[in-house]
Structure formats: C-alpha cells, structure tokens
Length: 448
Image 1 (cartoon, rainbow, N blue to C red):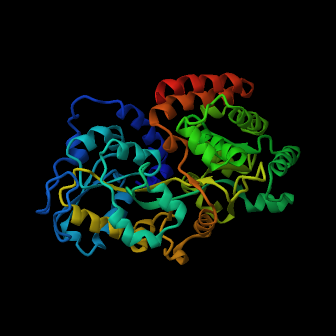
Image 2: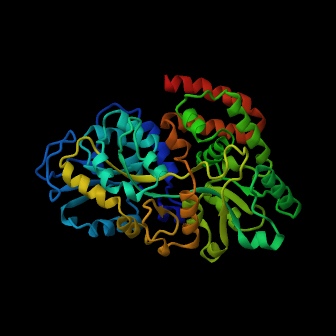
Image 3: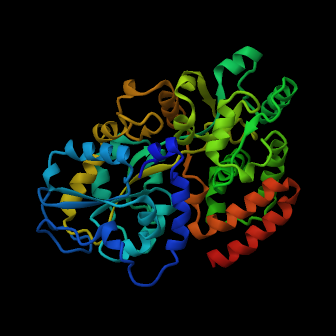
C-alpha cells in the first residue's frame, strides 16, 4: 500500500490511522467476517497448483491481487500499473476499503486470500512470515535484486533471512522548513543537536513562539521523533533490538533518549496531543509561529499549499552522538507486495511480482503522486519534483532504513501502549522515568 495521498489532501484516512486498526485484527481468532469476501475471496486460479505455495502453474495463467487502494486517485493509478503489464488480461484486482483490509488482514490470510496483496515492510511483514502465512519469493529477488539498495533488500526479508516483500514506494522522515524564512532571518541548517537548540532559541527570540509544530492526536507522529533520537544516540541496531524487546525500556540508554527529547519539547507548539498532524502541518505552513516540523514527506507534501511547495525544503535530523552520524539511519517506511502461502498459481503470481519490482511499474503508479518515491534504483528521477529528488538522495545515502516504530515492533505494543506512553511524556516531559517503567512492564506481558 502506498500512502493515501488523496485522503491526506482532504483530511481523510491516513496510513497510520489504518495501521492502528491492525493491532486489534491480530488478536482475532474467530470466524471470518462477512466482508472478508470483499477483501479477497477465492481467487480464480490459473490451472496451477492449488495453494500451499506450490511451484506449478504457468506465467500465462491467472493471478489475483488483494488491494487496499480504494481511493479514486490511487485506485486509478494502480489500474494503470496493471494495464502496463504484458499479461494484464490475466490479472484480477480485488479492491476493498482501507480499514476493512487492515482490520481483517489476519483472518484474510488464514482464509482464502488473493495470490498477491498490498502490505508493509518490517515487522508488519515479518509477523505474518513467522506464522507461515506468506510464501518466500527468493526466486523473484534473484531477478529483481539488482534494482534495489542493500538497505531496501534488508527491509524486504523475514527473520529467517528469506525474501517476502517486493518493495514499491517509500519516503523519509525529515525536518521541514521554508527556504524564505531561513533566508530572511539568516538561519543555517543545523548539523548537530547543539546547533538545533541554538536555532530554536534564536527563532523564539525572533518572534516565532513555538519553533517546531507537532500534532499527536492520531497517536503516531511522536513515534517518529522517538525513533530518530534513539537512532542518533544509540544507533540503528539498538532501535531494532528495542522494538523486539531484546533491550529493556528501563535501560539508561532509553531514559537518556527521553531526557534528550525533553529538551526539545520546550520548543513545540503547546497542546500537541490534542492536535491532528494535518493541523500541525497547517500551522507550519502559515509561517507565523512554527517554522519547522519533523514529519514524513508523505504527509507534509500533500498538506502544504501548492503556492508554497517551491519554498519547502528539509534536512535530516541533526547528529547527537558522533558515533551515529546523520547517514547512519532514518525512518523511511516501505510499502510493497507479498505473496500468500495459499497462492493458486505461483508462477503467474511470481511473474507479476517481478513486474512490480521494476522502475516502469513504480513510475506509472507515482506519476500523479508528488510525495512518495520509488524504491528501484533505476527509477527515472528526472520525473521527480525537487523534494522527491532530495528524498532519493537522503535515502540512498543512509546506511540503515528503519520502518517506523509502529512497523518495527508488534502492533499490539505500538497501539495503544507506546501511543499512550508518548502522550503521557509529551504532556509531562518530566515523567519519562515512569513512562519507561510502564513501557517495560507492559512489554514483558506482550513479548513473553
């Protein structure tokens, strides 16, 4: 699934709000809901093996795609992708609304799923791979592997080291600012944490009451800030281990992340936990009180007024510890496609996945989307906007791509446990010690 760009423009359902629903779905063990048929009833096989990831079938057989591209613009873009496939007449797309797809994904995969379906990288894919609900696609990667960076390759694997995801599109989390504001006041892009603190103090003295806009009402935006400060202080591997609860939330390293973050909260727009991320972007876009915002390009681009897009720029979150420079890791969530273990015609499904792993398919899909970027390295970047080109460069130059907290950890831990803990912290930054204790106590119950 890509970001819901059209929904973002209209204040509709966002990607992260959909992910929150998955936490409840993962706990479901009952019968299939009636609407599951819309998510992916029995697909019309192509004369190959009948499920279980068999090797039979023909590339010219039929294959079905489970899609959550229900918004008109995104649905149309994916339809164009299918039309561009050499065997398009054999591909059936079963689209359902976002929430139904997300909330019923567990039952969908255990029932009669489509051969191929939209989903996410990181823990979101690994969770189902570990349950034996996904078909490994190392054979597909043997053909498309040269199209992707090592970081993207790693994000497409399960815990067993096998490939499961064909990456599709992604975007970086960065600090946005307006070029005109920086030019007018002589501000310099901060390279270090101290530079950032100095910049925020200077902005405040220049009349910008709250230099950094934040909207945490939806529960996930602050996760990005925790991720990046953790990676800047403790490194990417510590982030991954913490998300898997191989590190304790009461470790001094984690408490120091919150202590560091507390220094930054004094420069936030007040009342952030009661404000949506869209409202935060609008505050930033107004140029009056908050000339910066830390957010994904997938969210900021569609929300900024078109007249202001040329003035928009960003920089990677500054360095805190020299052991973990700005190119050591960032959040850059990847969306893509997976093959169900119950695939009816594996050969046909693998052929379509191979096509999806091409720059041609990505470019067709992203033609109407000015925010996300393709993951294939041979993508024709001349078609990109200036911001998209900069997104490509920051992702290419970064050694490790984290997939965002609510994808890198278990969904039932992210929501509502981490969500509530971060809200508590933002409402009272001095409470970080009790926040860490609460997270560790609940993590023990979830991960054991």
